[in-house]
Length: 234
Image (cartoon, rainbow, N blue to C red; front, side, top):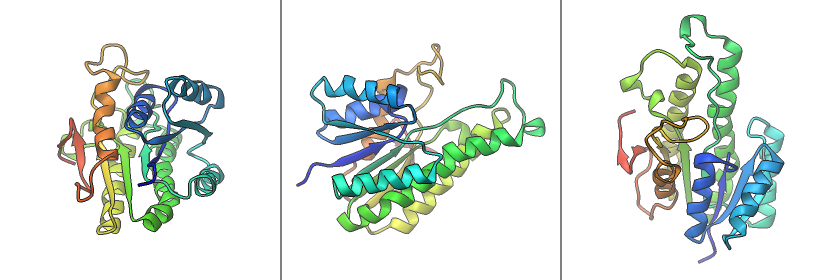
């Protein structure tokens, strides 16, 4: 069987970096992407120095041209892409932000990165996945996007993750029967730049469910939402 190829967005730090590391230790060739060439290349070099199968690609997930160029690069270099992990995300709501007075510019910018970018990347990789009759797509969501537990605060971030969950469900439904499994992962509250130093989970713990979903066997779950490898409510 050819070596699996994964694309991970926002792989230069935090959960994304750890997802890259864990996938590569499983023998997957990982294309680590990030908006910053310097940070992304440094992260990639750090993992490659450990003998892990890695490559770096500079990607602006909010740029259609950048996504198209990535898809062309993958097609020419590998002729396949087996795994897509949509990890890149932002939380730019001001402290104490409320829906009633939220700046729509903040909402639009958040949706561009957290929802529309994963959608565009899914569209970009699906042709190669369908050709190979194999695919694993993982969208990094958040408990803040759960409708069943929806509350106030951070409206732009919450809306973007709820919408990402919808993208997950729709993509999974349309891909059903093709051996392309599409799921959402909630990493929990993790000690990263976004999560802060007081979060209870390590990045290793935060990355585990996403890596599990990215390496599901044929016939595994699709259209699901998982935390700690267990289904959770939308």
